[in-house]
Image 1 (cartoon, rainbow, N blue to C red):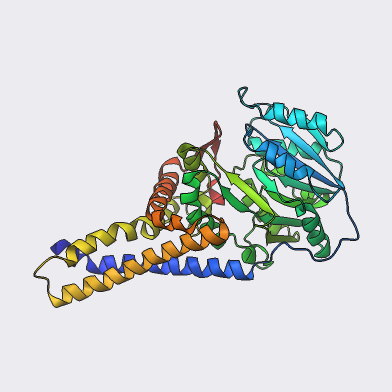
Image 2 (image 1 turned 180 degrees about the vertical axis):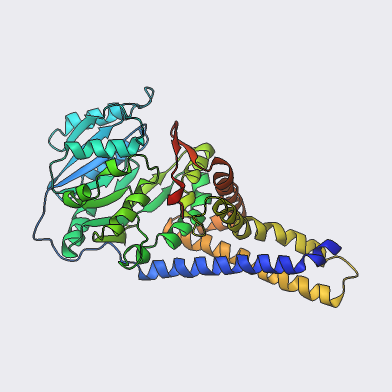
Length: 408
């Protein structure tokens, strides 16, 4: 018990830091919700330029049919779909078979391309996107993912917005469609991190170097794409969407990020293992990070611990101590202050869960009841990624080396 009293200043400092972190997070989250531009119809576009939709696929038989159905139902008619199938696909998976049936049924709309074997040094998706570009013939390219669901008017809205604002790049923030229990528990917090670190407010500010695009939907002119060096320039980057966005900002190419949750959904599904791997490759989302290779992982891990594990672990300890007899008035008052601060932190975490679940993920806000479990899973995974995996991650049966300079 005496140890607790001796450590009281440290506990107060740690709890106060947790409170500060979550106060900043929720403030920025609300600002992102209210101030970010949204994808909506500006005016009927006089010009309807032809668009190449580039769609890389690999081992995604669960979603590819829904994705193609959505793309085929677009009310924007001047476009074609180039589906690039990874040649290293699992033979047991039926993705290629499904795409082949669609391409035969809609030969004028869908072109199926079998990518050559991935060269050394390339990330699979980057190679597929580059292969799709080589088969394209339009001045406007639209990159999307096979786990993405499109409303029938999204291309019309996006091209209209793109032309009206004289943009070179337009990317649309999707609604995450969490289809498994682990995603529903994890993403209220993880998507909050993304809103804080890569909000449309920061990305759209030409004076900020924060850049990002969503791989599930971004439109870019051929001229700008080639100026950036295409996906060949970022061939080995696992975080291609972040790196590409930063290159766009550095090149001073006109980029705009808009919210399109009512028009675009990205489906997340799978086992706990899939969710764990997805988390590992998302540790760049955590807003508090340092570029220092030696101390950066430690600082990031400590910040994760303070914001996600510490508040939940401290509460039952404090409740037990407060009920102890023979405590001095000073000790009781100190413990009560600590208890109140810690409780406020937990309430803020729960509020974030409710906001993100209801208005961001469109799922039941009752998942806030298991916020502590989701927080622990995220914290353990991110700390493991920062301290243990460091430069290597596994995803869909492949192992990649991560360029740590992009985790900031």
